[in-house]
Length: 298
Image (cartoon, rainbow, N blue to C red; front, side, top):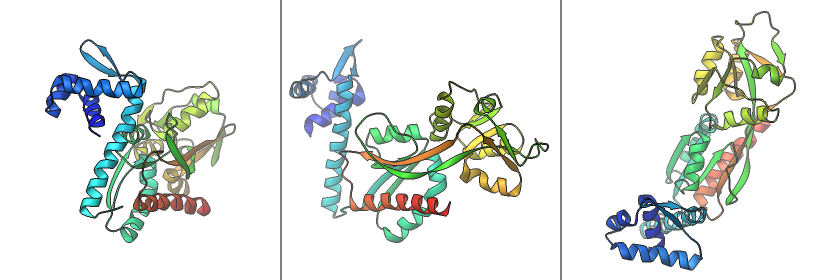
């Protein structure tokens, strides 16, 4: 534990000297601890350039293990000493899943797990993946698979994404307007920001046909894109959840893409070394059950 803690602080400070100051240790003692880790694992943890330390790939891999082990060690002290066993859970959701499912799941948590110390982070998928990799959260529900092989993943539903435009801007067009993916790529598009699961879904479909786009508007807010589509600024590609009410009211019309389908697939994911407590498992089941109910409703 001591070696892992020293290693973590050196990674944070990117300097043996700064780490020694923070740990209130001598510089040689910190250096020896790092060398002992390198000797034990028979790898180089750092590259030393211009008086700074840079993690090697092996060092980055060890850091993930070290942070997981240290976090679980801290949790064991907090839980066992304070007799709060299995009561803490920190999870991450990407923005779309947060907007679609969080309210329903929160009601279940409040009813069935009222004493759980719960922390939820909602952000776009790239940020949630980073938090998962650094053990800032216990598990996540996102809509794209992160790199690496250290993950355990479960299907957790998904949703069709639809291309929509203002009904008033194109009154001469039929209720459902049909175009090809190539034609769509040439239109003024309103898309979510790079790094989001929704944008990744669109980009992957376009890339499969050697197509790319520069959207007229990129936004972290699906509601902003929806509003711009209503006002005739372009074509938005958004999950069905966001557009179904406007389609019913006649503010928007669907654009059928004749040769492509946009489909978000959600996954529930955690590190394979993560200890999943009963409270975490129950909350994970809430999200999976919610996805199953949504699919039956469709």
